[in-house]
Length: 293
Image 1 (cartoon, rainbow, N blue to C red):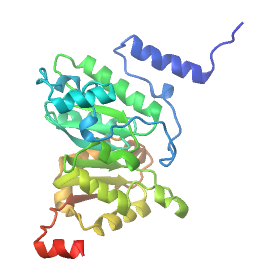
Image 2 (cartoon, rainbow, N blue to C red; image 1 turned 90 degrees about the vertical axis):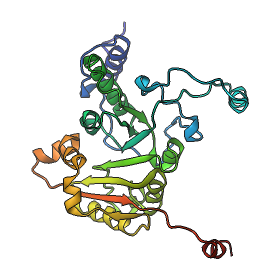
Image 3 (cartoon, rainbow, N blue to C red; image 1 turned 60 degrees about the vertical axis):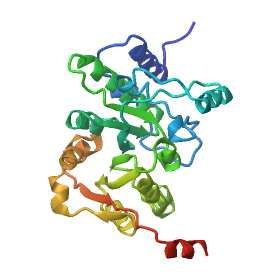
Image 4 (cartoon, rainbow, N blue to C red; image 1 turned 90 degrees about the horizontal axis):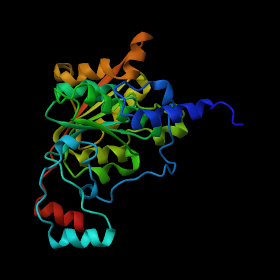
């Protein structure tokens, strides 16, 4: 005779029932618990698009799916024949904001009504945390169906350290949030920090000129690291403090993330820095010749 389900089985049963029953009750975090950090260099069996044009966002933002698709051209038909999959459904607008390492989705939920005409995506590597955010958003949409709220946010499981350019075209995003990332205190672990020379180049790629990277942490050493690496990158400049404090998103970022609330409860410090994506320099014929030589 089988014994009572263990804690892991109880969590799995709860999450399954939460989705199958389409319950209007908010998910409970204790049933989505997972290790605080994940190794970004491990093989997490992730699904990701080959190119941004191959990504089908329709299930993430169903309220923004284009109603009628034009007749597919020969290239689309040929691609579908080769892959065996139908072409991805298009949205009425592009995603413009990415919350990298979105955790339990506090920032996404707070930004949704503040940016109602903008699509925001949370990107989280941990499976169960991603499921929590997805269930949280699903319930919020149900509870606010008449007002049609929270249709502009969603969450996807992704490893942005490996696959960020697979999801977004060059210059697609206007904002990238990096909130309370893993500090990786040990020197040998610094290569796993979410801000580095290489990764900053990827942020520069997906951000449009004038776009902003928002960073916040309660670890001063990590703050200094992020500032040093962004200021050293030719595609970014630091946003002056006066302009930073006038940004509505900064106030939301300080108070609405789960980590931010924890820091407040412990009366800790929060270190904020914003960085603006600069215009790419113009290349004249002489510059091109020097590059090719």
